[in-house]
View (cartoon, rainbow, N blue to C red):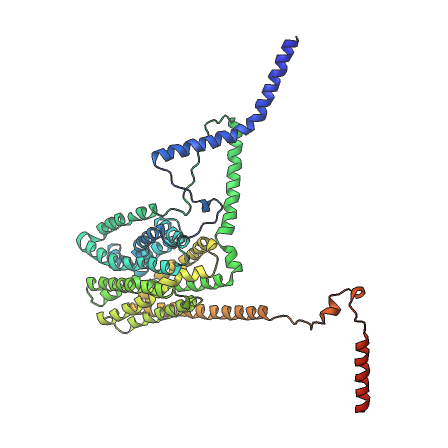
Length: 489
């Protein structure tokens, strides 16, 4: 019996030790699995070194290195996405004739394309917005230059896509042209493949043993669904920058101005080719105007980016951006003079110069109004709001053409819209800067300091204050001074 009891006690002790060690073995198993997975990936040549700075969440922007590859990829993405809706003007008359549609109905094609590009849901947006966001994380000190260089992608697309579209239109018609252009746009996938996050990926292994009951899995799945829904609602409230729109007055003013600007900013690019061809200009010449616009942007944007990266222009980006936007709006009135090639060429050059500055500083001004950690959310909310005006701008212009029968009214309306938005941004930011300067001066006024008393009377305890005891020599001096005073009297 004693032997059996001893065995039983020993067995109970062993089982107790196994139970106590069980929770400690689970993380060891996971750690072991991770080590096995990492070792296998190292042997296969698939692992990448993890940046130690990424472990604590503080990642420093390289301002170079792989960032230059990301910059080139961003240029190509912007060339293929932002510039593509402008090419729709080449196929505008074909779409209108093919479907026997009015100007208002035909203009919905480029307006929906441009609006969805900014609002999200489809391929253009999934290429454009992540590219701009990732570029902002790779560059801080050279951010103005990087944004200016990336904006040359739009100019590159405006320079090449109209000529390519016109050639394809001549050879294949509008249906075949769309198929070829769709294949060209697939290069965005290649550009997205080189945009890796800072810090490198972290590899996790899978659990080798999983003996959870089915009921427990279902309850956990329901809990995850509830947590995911709550997390989604929290993300919408926090990551869509509604708090910035409420609390950050600079961001609010910028969003209002840019949203109003987009009502007439891209409309001239859509109606330039129809306006020129309606006045008996050859379509190849009209397409050449868009290419010249792109060439001007390519030539001007890099030096503009270098110029405004200098310390002299620190704090002045908003005013330069507003002045360029004002010139861009007023340049649309040049088209109201005449529809000849020389006049439209002068318009394209003026529009291209101002557009270069606007495109180079647009994201830089946005980054200056808020913290970089909130930039993706701020850009997303701005894109959603401006997509509304981008959606209704071309159809409103189409209604104006259908009612009046003339295209130059469209350019006049765009001139008033863009110029008014520029004035709004300039005045509002000047008022905000003036208010901040007054608040800063109020904080820098030094407080009135009361006059200091002698240290011997303030710093010493009354019982321990030093008192001088007069000596014999002091008494003689005192008597001499008193005698002198009496003789003066």
